[in-house]
View 1 (cartoon, helix red, strand yellow):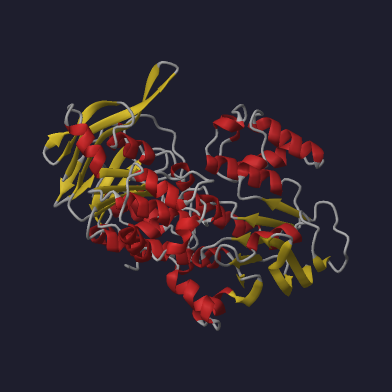
View 2: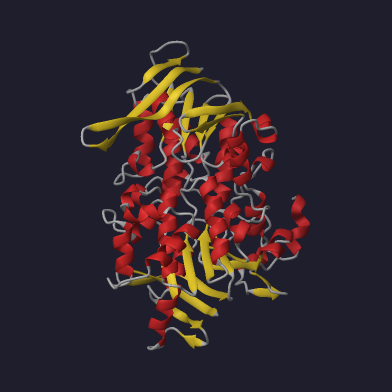
Length: 245
Length: 301
């Protein structure tokens, strides 16, 4: 269980010569991310989704407030893993797929057989891909490899910040179904800007706007009986192939 | 207006020619929105670049207003009437120059009608104040709209957009699509995308590509009613939407070679599929599947 209390993050913006004003990327957030479910976070661009993901995964330590992992401030090794939107910064372009899988399992003291099984669960054949260099893979295949590396040590939580943005629709459908099947062992925090896609994947949804959580509830309640005006707007404007503009 | 006949095109790599798209037939009418749908690596961008004449085409013809664009005099006229907006709108703007500067460059530094520019900007719901801002200071959605506004200043007859909705949140996507619907009254639009939802909301006619071939093309209404190719059926069934929450997807992996482009992921194959497959047409609904309508019956397998 990850608990955050009064979390605030502010940036200083230059407004003139020697004059600065505060910009609140996150404004006094308190909530709990439960275990063994998929938590979905959504909101329009600039609402603070990535800032929140950076802070709870321990990537950004410059904030005020508290983040508690199982009621302690210390984060255990292997407690949480983070997959970025951009796969280029989490992979080494001039090494092979085999090198990535081997190194990840050696560093985490994991059996190589089980790592290969995890790679193959993303619908890529290990024998075809083991000797390929990463810079010859397509964006979707890179994102699948980055996801595999993150789940190799069996972390308790995994944070996906638009981690499947380069996949084509059928592969996206498959990967989101895969998330649903692993959520009993690895809890997921899934971030996306399309509320319909988040509702498809997750069990519990948080809606961010201008650095605040304006609504959080079960998926069914949010999609059928939204309370906030902004949530209604997000649902109305979310693209759906059966609607026609 | 624009007719593409049996176009094949590709790239040179190490002095060897690799064909990427094969045998494409496509028709664009007046005031029509054409959608090109396909997964990554299916040749959508290559097709748009080939239509613009940016890359080498090994065979086929592109006919604009009754004349082939590959003949000498016609190409410049086509280039003046067709505009291609690239996938990353940063490629078309100088980051450190103001928007005013970049519009001036469009007009070759001659004087231009500023009121017309401002009215066009407000039509695309852009504040005229951003004329003084640098491209670096704009957000993604704004930059897309600025590039589309700059394309419209040239008054094109054909506007080609390569993945215009990637990286935009749902509210900006809705606004952009609404604007494209307005622009349709003046020009024809070709949109390539891998997002099923956004494309079906505006496109009038949709071409589905897979591995460099068009495998199905139809009016959007016919396509929603009935699909002739198994791949089209799959992408419209497995859409990550809240209403499909309980759907389960069982992947299929075959080990066959030759014939249909979709042979290795198709759940309905038999031995016929390894032959070359002709492109058939029923009442303006084209498809490239040898097993239609047979595969519709063994759905329960």
